[in-house]
Length: 292
Image (cartoon, rainbow, N blue to C red; front, side, top):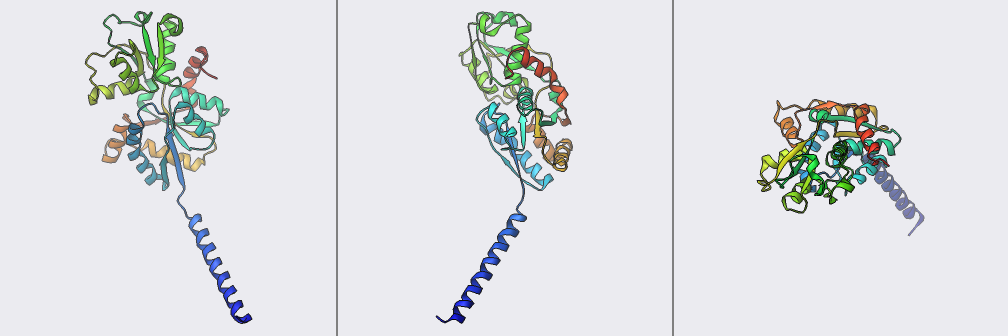
């Protein structure tokens, strides 16, 4: 091989490498950004995915971004994923929002909530005919949902304490089912005498008739309190945060896409929210010794 031929080959290789590098640079420069989304696992994973898919498609259209839903194993994992920059947007309960606020030193922002979350409620259910008020739970077996659940643990515990009932000392045994639908299954299956859960999930189970709950009844409904919201980190680009908020706020039931999303989210509409709305939740968590 002469020098001329070797030189030509080297030049061609250099041009080829430059072309490949340029193409890769252009590809990655114009690669679609990704919005990473998650939610506390307050229902079965399959149900969470089913509820999110139409919303994810909608947000992708509005933001011109790829939207990815990443399930987490438990409530604490949702909080950690947000504050450690593993996700950008997360569906939290009031208590998990407070946990994220404290853990991040106020570096999270509650963006929007459903109108229903302004006066959210928990229900206490049982199959025992002798349980008709909170005081009747003394000496009984009982299940909460997840330990970090607002509507499945924190607020039910708060109302029990207000009724002079200490779950640890006044009840025969307490358990944590891990999710609202699991609480219904535990009560219905006779594993516990009673349990507390999110009123929205209870109403969905009743309406869909997916469980034989003919023997299960609500014997106490709590007063209202602020609960769920969609939360982002404070370092999210303000322009993106505004677009995201607007996307939620413009959802309405007058078009097919909006109605499908809102129905799946069990919402009439989304409204703005703010950190101050969760002061009562934070106070309840501190009073119950649950905020670490």
